[in-house]
Image (cartoon, rainbow, N blue to C red; front, side, top):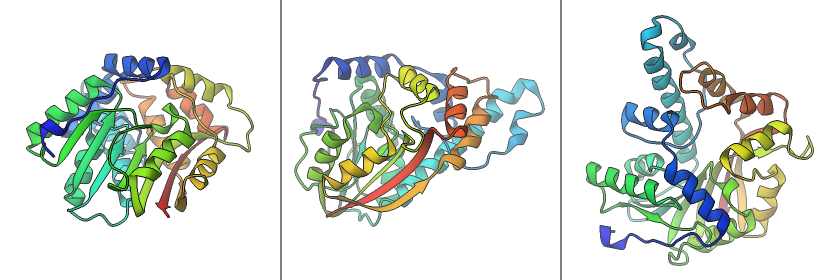
Length: 285
């Protein structure tokens, strides 16, 4: 890949346009300041037990300490997802669907040595990520495109692995998995980490509805993932409930100067059982 292979497709619906506008305008410190810790800019949450001592001590450095710890936890989440992508060789190609500013794409390239295509509907995110690729001198292997993940235009069977990290709630699952199934080589691997509402609880709770409104998204029921996968030749190979693993991240973030106002809704939804944080890995058959 070279810079001349970057692809651009405008949003094809009013809703997609609203999502693109949201992320084109987004400049939240909880994303940007965390990324500045190591240069890997993520747009997802974290897992693992924090070092709670970062919330204590000198008030003058508490922002820096908590920022570094939150970034460590989101790094653990990204690595956990990549652990489930299966075997990928340097000669193969993989896709980060809903790549944000590209953090996980760079981690994947460093791990596997392969070509990575990141796609986002946000022009601002794509430009940022491509600038990062040039700074890292990997633009010949890691490229970012402004594309609709439901209709990417990439070649059928061209991807060995595809992942969505907290981005499936912006799409219709059947349309999304139909496109992923088309792109994946037979035996390829799909992985998502996502928040989903718990079917056992019933309809989305008040807290889940608050999250939907905050991010202009549509959180799917847990069962919806498995129905859409079954309809699109994606057979689950691993299912991991990460709810308890992500709660400490949110509790620490709620104590942080980087609070956005949505933290309590996540904590409430996870604690009352109406919301779950799941990893699902599936093989293309």
